[in-house]
Length: 101
Image (cartoon, rainbow, N blue to C red; front, top):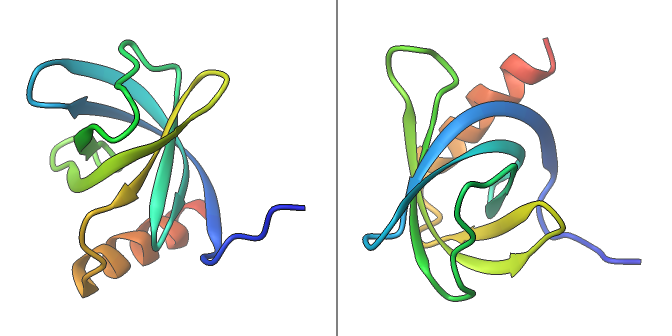
């Protein structure tokens, strides 16, 4: 059984992502303090690719995350955040509050 170091929150938010060379759309389906998982991706970046992710929790102002592709999944990919700073923790806490309400 795989053990994760961070609590994960199941989500379903529209998102866009950019690798610098390409842009795509996806659904954010899993979020934690250390990374995120995207499904229904339009473009599958290679492992190790840097990704900038824009998540539309509220329609007007998306929040932004940066990470590296660490694994491919059946329908998408997972990223590990580049920087684990307090801002990322706050964003994850905000999303967790929305999802759990």
